[in-house]
Image (cartoon, rainbow, N blue to C red; front, side, top):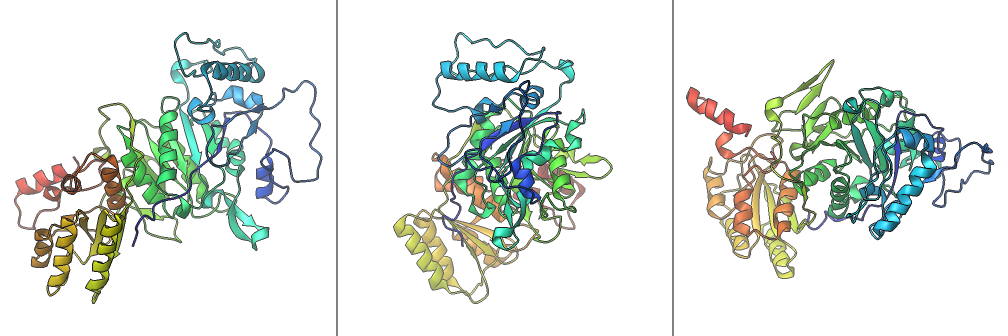
Amino acid sequence: GMSGGMGGGGLGGGGSSFGSGSSSFGGAYKRWFGTEGIDDDDGKNKSSAAPPAESESETPPVKIRPRSYSRRRRTHFLDPSILSKALQSPAGALYGDGLTAEERFHDDEELLNESNTDEGMTELIHPDESDIFIPEFPINEFERLRRKRVLVLCTGGTLTMAPDPDRGGALAPVEGAVTAYMREMKELNHTNMPEVVVHEYTPFYDSSDLGPPDWAVLANDIKANYLHFDGFVVLMGTDTMAYCSTALSFMLENLGKPVVFTGSQIPLCEPYNDARRNLIMALIFASRDTVNEVSVFFHDRLLRACRTTKVNTHRLMAFDSPNFDPLAKIGITIDENEHLILPPPRGALRVHSDMDTRLLTIRLVPGFDDGMIKALIQSGYESNSLKTLVLQLYGTGNVPSVKDDFLQILSDAREKGILVVASTQCFTGSVMMGHYATGLALEQAGVVSANDMTLEAIACKCAYLFGRGDLTNEEVGNLLSVSIRGEVTPADALSPPPLSSTYQRASRKGKKYL
């Protein structure tokens, strides 16, 4: 079951940016390959080797101050020549919330004066009426043909890992290594590739430790940087990527830019890996103007986030969308299913970060004990710790017809204000509660059908709808079968019977993609 297990620690981190220029490897990159110790929090190298002497003509490194979070964040030191060739640090991710407008202006002015003396920079002008100052961007030589800008948010995961001798050779994340590695990727220097800004949260977390508080940090960071970038890439572990990406698809209302999740099954430091291609393709999709929604790219396909589930722990195609075709597949070319892509948003971006995680999932097995389920429901009701009960049933949504007491338990749960949702244990297919007599009995007991939603979509959608605070149980139950982010196929759009007419088949097929 899953009851309140979606919680997790908060994320913190530091930010860094880079453009087409080159830079020497940092301590994290050297540690990745076992040549030197990583820098600690104070920026002091643990290795005994003396740092190379700097010439008097070189400009001192620029310290980028991160926003304040409850957890420790890592600050990267970048060569000013790199900084001047890339997008200026995004205000939402790298500037403290407690600063006044004068302090922001002073920091921005000092940063630009120290880090850039090239021509082509716009003049730093303090706005007359503004509470938050956003630094001006460099003027490109060909302004109309400027490169897209993509923000990469990295929380950890297999992609960032390397063998740790202190842990017996077990894989462990290396902070700063992805940033250092991406500085040396020649693919990012291509004129058609976007400018990239990397923001690493510190410390890295395993994806199983991430929950709704961390999802809210990602959603708010995307909102804070929404006007600075053309797209966003989230790097994280694969274990709960389907949950995190699905949650963000509901949190980010009226999203008009691509947010692409990716990771890898093999670390980036290995000679043979899937991380490099996943990372490059995620950047490409994040810089395109076609798929403006939350998605997951893995192996050779781009999947809608709220239709995605993890299907394999060893193969490179770790994710699939069982009841929905991929948004795009890659080969020699990128083949997009344009008829599946969501329409443009109708309003401004809004973030819903309140998620009600009082949810329990039970997968039924033959011969299950009714008393155990009754005790769970009663305990959750008395402690007010249960709002949604998700039952993974047999086939199209069936339970044993001889268990009348079980149906009465579910009916009592509805009367106590607990929403009971029926899903299927099958990998593909949909719940059709009125198809068999046993399923019809569930419908009469007040159980709501989840149709063809994944378990991740059911959990995150219920948490989102109840977290809004303006919907009743009946309204939430009615909205479960309504497509909000493309997460569910309406019941009247499912495949018709074999002997249906041409009109029935055509009308249902049209409704499927609405």
